[in-house]
Amino acid sequence: MSGQVPSASAAFSMIDISPAIVLEGRTTTVSNDQPQVAALLNRLIELQQRQLEIAEAAAKAAGEANRRREAEVEQWQKKNQHLVATCREALGVLEGVQRSFLEQMAEYVLENQESLTDGEFVLSEFVDRFGPRMAHLSGVMGMLSQLVASPQSREE
Image 1 (cartoon, helix red, strand yellow):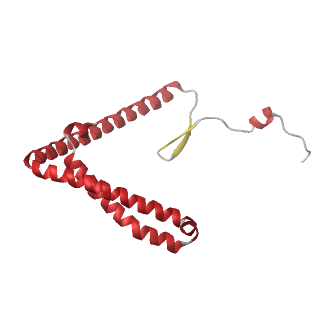
Image 2 (tube, helix red, strand yellow):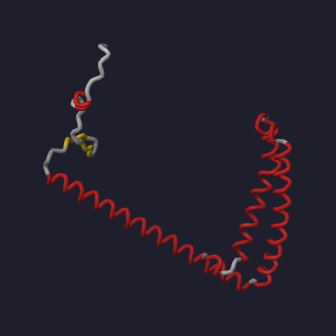
Image 3 (cartoon, helix red, strand yellow):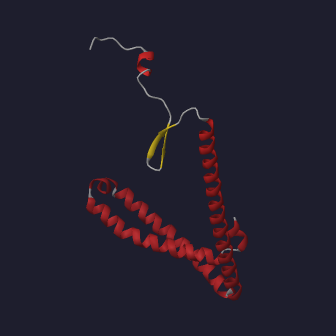
């Protein structure tokens, strides 16, 4: 190389900037043919409108399913008011259990922080010891929360 930097105009003159569109596996170059560009843009708009219609239909279906599920839960709550009260009490107890379990887990992490990052065995032991119980406890609490939730709090 001669050590000279080519000018910007020389660098850009080597780049092909003609627009190309890939349609059905073929690459075609778009000329200044306005009707073709307009047709492509109209097709793009049609496809976006169709996507919007599909998204709206999916949202409507999901909303209907949620409303139906909420109605079922509300009907169950009315039929089982004594059980709802018992579940509410159990949820309060389990919240205390979860709080205690989280404290134990946090203490374990703090006591073993170096071993957790350095050793695979300690990390596996931690996951085995705390993971399944926390996952199951959270699942049960989530179910109880849904059963005891008032219709107004579910809408929020």
